Amino acid sequence: MKATRLKLYGSVALALGFLFGSYFAVEQSHAVSWTRYGIAFVVTAVGAVLLRVAQSRSGGEEHKVAADITTIGRTLDTLVTRVSAMNASKTEADVFGVSQRIDDECVDTINEFVEAREALIHRHGLELYAELMNEFARGERALNRAWCASADGYVDEVNLCLERAESHLTAARAVFQRVASPDRHAT
Figure 1: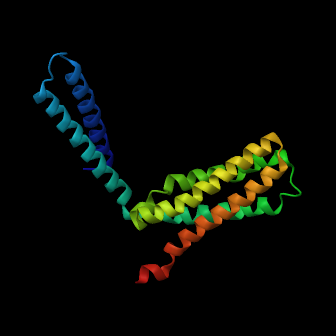
Figure 2: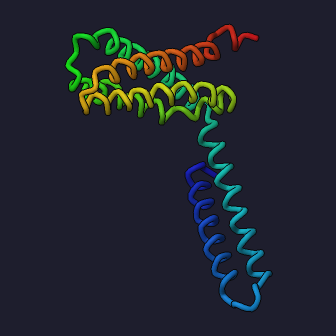
């Protein structure tokens, strides 16, 4: 069965089990029909299991994971390059133009990264995912703060946030490069 069908069936079972279980729990004020409630609980549990299976099948397809890993590396390289360029030209840049530049040069790339990020879990596990996402989230947050400071015209805050964003995104790329190196897979 395809992952999309499993996801559909799992979602329906989960929702129906939850709704009927809730209904059976409050249907009679003096007692709960434990048999019907138990059946609803089982349907909910089956829905949750189907969703887990669908998630592992769709995310675990090796060609999709490989493509997403490539996307992650490319987007991290692109973000570091673009933020480094913004940081290098920050003294000449119009403070109010930085927010537009972030929108134009970084938002789509960040969205691509976010769409592909779960491949890290399938390929490298939760520990690496958490380490990389910690740095990435800090970098993204610093970019968001730079955007806000730019919109408000705070030059010093823009400069500080661009430096932080570059530092954290570079660290995220270093984490990715450490585990994505060919030497690691050869062992």
